[in-house]
Image (tube, rainbow, N blue to C red; front, side, top):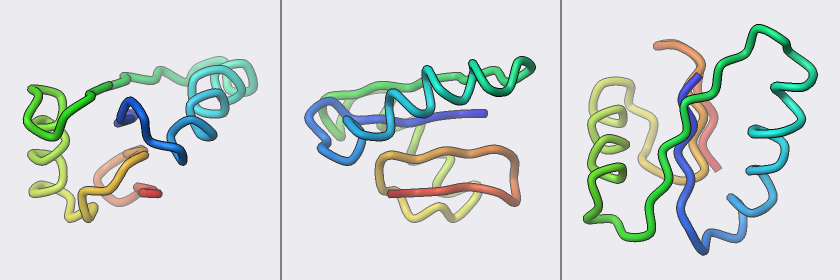
Length: 74
């Protein structure tokens, strides 16, 4: 899955440990590709914008994309 998180985001601070620690420990075959950014103009934020255009996710963080039909945005 793909995970987008922003430095300084209070919701991301709560979801990071779950997505990056709890879920991989629980689901052995889970692979998390994490994109972290500090500013909306950084390359990883632009990548998130491309995912938003492709999947209509809404562009908020934190953002988890499991596949084309399954995503969660905080």
